[in-house]
Image 1 (cartoon, rainbow, N blue to C red):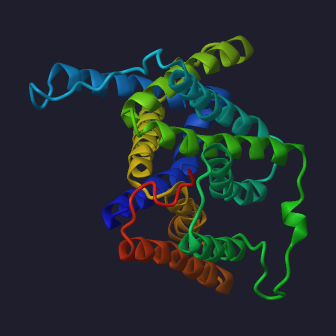
Image 2: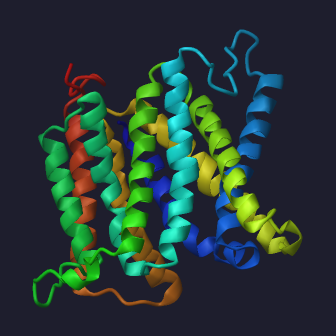
Length: 322
């Protein structure tokens, strides 16, 4: 991947890291379940407006029009997109809502970093994709950095605080959501060889919105949109468009340009680093030695992979087993 693609991935993780803080008002006004629904419903509307506009006013007359939805045939590809919609746009937001009600914020922060590991594991299981030596080194540095930032690895005693990662029911539910998010990267990357990323994610959002509506509306009723203030509406639009749809679409673009899944999902380790920086900037929290060490290790891991890819310009499938 080019350095510019990496910059885009950093911006995606910046958005995802600050999303929980920004949507706090939205959760207060409509509740967590309807927030999960609005996340993809607003994103789906924005997707149809943007793609519809591009179809009406193409840049070139000869420019190929990107289809809004996945074709029904071949059936295998269509079912793969349906699986992405069920996992990423339905199960993931629901499990996050349910899991956070019975789990701690500290455990949630720790469990998010399982996503890169799940993605690499699923990539190997489904498509026999493996990592090279630079990936292993980068993942090791980034994982150690996260352990310091999250204080799982205590700088003072240099010992693991096992009480922070004790798994209970809520944690297992959250872990299911993390695995569902990882499936997005694995399954969607395979489809980007033949389909536009917008078509893949737009169809997945449609599947997710329909399923969320079928579950949430009988359970919690219709979204109380009349309770939304002006700031609430702005937050809902931002969350659906700039906090969800655009980053997820760019994620597919990065996957289509990457040598392997590992190169892209490595950037997810930046989220705890960015979250720490946001806490320092806006909440006045102080940096300790473990934050400085952890941040340096995470940045070192990401930079190591960027430099490794620039040194060795491999074809996209060069590290994929037949």
